[in-house]
Length: 505
Image (cartoon, rainbow, N blue to C red; front, side, top):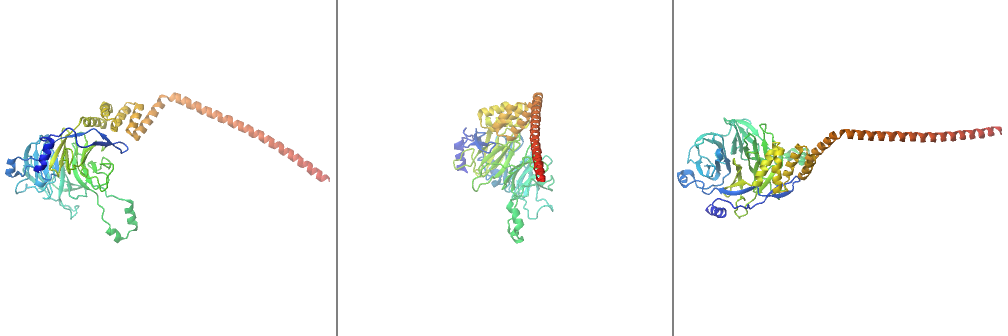
């Protein structure tokens, strides 16, 4: 720990990072092609090596540094609450990272935690802890005093083999708890304020392939019994925004790695595929945590690659950054990122479980512009967003979402030609098609009289031509018929003469 701390301190200079980040920031265009953008988030410092003062350590607060931290929560006034799992405690820091208190480190008693994996703090500063190894949800008051616990709920709807090992928890304004469980493929467990089981929420779907259908048709019962039971992917984390929407991240799923759930459990993002467009061999999308800022932007960690992906409120990618530390120990790279949180100013706090530290990032001017323009666009304020999108394009002409924002602004003002050009640059087939039809309808309405007269004249011309053609055709048929009739009369007369001559003979 001391050696690692020295390395980071020498590199970053008393907790402050250098200006140039050691990673690439990128996004994907409408066709899924990756392109580089300016840094969206800049690492500015870290926490983790001397969080607990020596006097607190002497009083039983535990060692000064972190040990395998699994979770981080930003509460009221931007205070930080860290689930320091390996040390079996919660560390409370103020907005500046200064020590406030240690929670759950009592040597004995009901308040003693055992390898907690998650922490959540309400607006009233009540602290809920997913006390994993104690198989409970532990609740503390704002001073850190133990209040109560929630053990495994009793219900006929819960499997008898279920191990109640909470890993993450969030609490809504009604006091209902949304709990993720270790190996909890059933989804998020919903508990009432009294701890009663209310059901499962936001479960993933079981993957199904055509070959599975064929197996059911042709396999015997014995063969089907030997097949490994398919289970849905596990919900790895849960979060909640200011509006009460619940968000989940999942692992071992082909799509819907991130979800935004309404009260009925429906995914409002539409079960998309999140993360990198292409995966390497033996690589999977391993989203272990997500957080939502005040504008609705979703930031999520892919622990497999160490990349942070940020999406807008509709689940559309804004940019991605970060990466795995390859032994160079630079801020901005991670050994194993395990948790992410955002404060009221938009700063991101990312926990590195293996490095036993928390890295702090602030948004760049480029990211701030995109956040502002995106928020205005999603609110339907396209004209207000146009100026900001132009600034984005001035910084990066390849950022296609800026063209999309400008296209919507032109569309709203009825500037169809300009909207068509911007939709084309953005690669939006749907937007281009819709604008084209609107443009055509407006043109027809504007030129209706001319178009009607022209169409009528064209129809009259075609009709007159058809009548003339038909008359000529009838005339030709009449002349041809007269000639046939005359020929027939001559033939008949010749027959009569031959017949008369034969009779005379």
